[in-house]
Length: 439
Picture 1 (cartoon, rainbow, N blue to C red):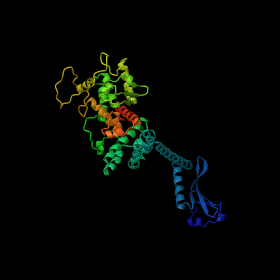
Picture 2 (cartoon, rainbow, N blue to C red):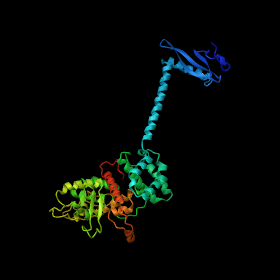
Picture 3 (tube, rainbow, N blue to C red):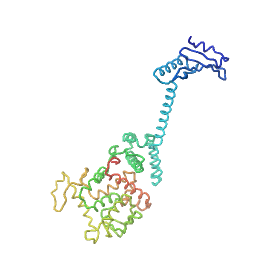
Picture 4 (cartoon, rainbow, N blue to C red):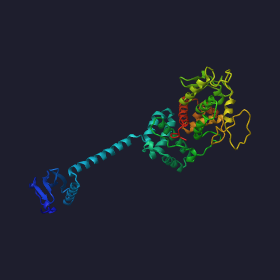
C-alpha cells in the first residue's frame, strides 16, 4: 500500500468528510470538516488483541504532523509486540498521570494547611499580644512587618531553623540595630514558645541562641543563671539530697521574683490558691514593703505551692520551723544552697556540720539565693517583658522619684502576663527532655 504524503492531505476538500484514508502498517485516517470548512484527519492504528479488532488513536493532522503520527503508530506496535494492549496501556498511563497530579495537589494542600511564620505571628498577636499595651504591641508589629515577616513569614513555622533566625538578626546587625536584634530574638523566642505550647511547632529554632550570639553586649555584671543553667539545676536538684521545701523555695523565687525573706516568712492566709494570688502588705515587712504588693501566680508557681502545701501540713506558715512555732530562719535557705557548691578556685577548708559537696555547681560559677531573683527579672526581659514591668514584678521601685509620683498606672494586666510568661518558660526549662528547650 502506498504511503500518504503531506501534499495529499493538504489537497483534501471539504466534500471529503467521512471518507477513509489508508497508510501502510494498518494506519487509517478519517476525514473531518470543521465549521469553518477546515479539513482534519484523525488517524488510528488498527490491531488485534485477544482475538478482537481494536484501534488506538495516533494523532490528528494537521495539528500533528504525519511523521509524528507514524511514530505514535510504531510506539503502539512495540507495546503490542511486548505483549501489552496499547489501548489499555495508554489508559493506564493517563490514570497514573492523574494520580501523580492528584498527589501533587494533596501535597500542596497539606503544605498550605501548615501554619507559616506569618500565621503563627497573627495567632500570637490575637491571643497573646492583645494583652500588651497598645503602644508596645504596635511597636512589635511594626518591627515584625519590617524585619521578620518579609524574610521568613512565608516559611512553614515548623521548618524554621537557626539559620533562618540568624538571617533575620544579621540583617539588623548590618545596619547597626544591635538592641533591636536582641529584642527581636527575645520576641521570636516568646512566639515560638507560644507555638510549642499549642503544638503548632515541634521545637523552638532559637535553641541555645543568646544575645551574645547576635552581637548583643551584656551590661549586667551581677550573677544570674542562664537558661542552660536553669535546666541543669532542675536535673541536679533531685540528686542533691536537698530539703524538699528548699527545692520548692528555689522555684517559687524564680517564678515570682520575690525576696527570700518575704517567701520564707509567708503565711498561707496571704495565698489565695483559688484566685491564684499572693499578697504582701506593709504590716508584714516595713523595712522592704511600703505598699501592698500582689503576685499573680502562674500555673508553674501554683504547682509548687500545691507541693509545699502537702509538706507544711496544718502549719499557718509556708515554711514552718522544726518546732512549728514560726517560720524558718531565712539563712537556712542560703546555707543549704551554699553548702552544695564547691569550686576549685575557691579552695576553702570544709566546715563542720556542712554537706560540703559540689552537687549544685553550675557552669557560671557560685550562685546565691538573691541571684535567683535577679534571674527571674532577667528572664522576663529576655522574654519580651518591658523592663519597667519586670522591675515592678520583683518589687523594685523606680529610682526616679518624680516618675514614681506622676506615673501611677498599676500595670496589673502587664504584671499578670509577665508572671504567666515566666511560668511557662520555667515549665519548659525544667522538663527532663531537652528536645524542646529554648536554651
